[in-house]
Length: 210
Image 1 (cartoon, rainbow, N blue to C red):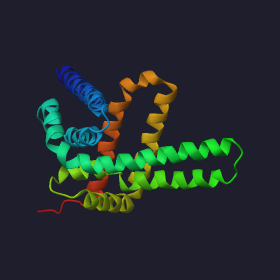
Image 2: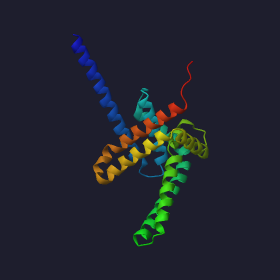
Image 3: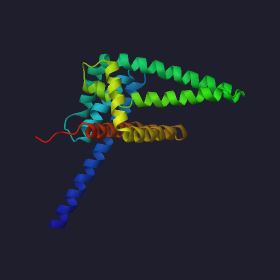
Image 4: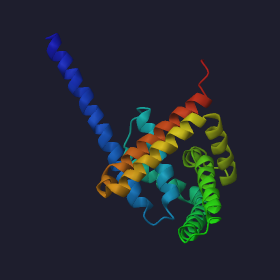
């Protein structure tokens, strides 16, 4: 009897794990689709972070309804900050392509420009590491204040920022070589980014015992 009960508990835990993995994969794909217009990426990321953290913490509720509710609520709040960030990303990509072209044409000095672009990319990753969950958590917060808090949290929890950045970069690089991984990578990114934010936030702001 005990053995059957033990096996039943294992099945329940396995089913719960598989359901959670499926939920992350589906939320990742929904976020990817919602991000395709680009202008909506900020709201999609904010919603993905919010739902991802709630799933990691084991909070119950309809995650799909909650996702679109958060997406709708955060669109006006998050989008202006995202558009500024998007402009900086476009400028960075344009400069990187420009210096890369010059470097491949034989201009040695262009390698310095590529180095500057790499530093700028790291800086953008640093200040924006936890930007969207912070904006989603604070509906009335200005974008510049959220950027400061994101940079503060990344600086204080630099290990989590570095680990988050490396794994995220590796997952995105995999899709370059294996495009079919786009089916699972968005979900993996939602889980990983939410996990890193949750751990960094809890480490920096631990709950005081009552």
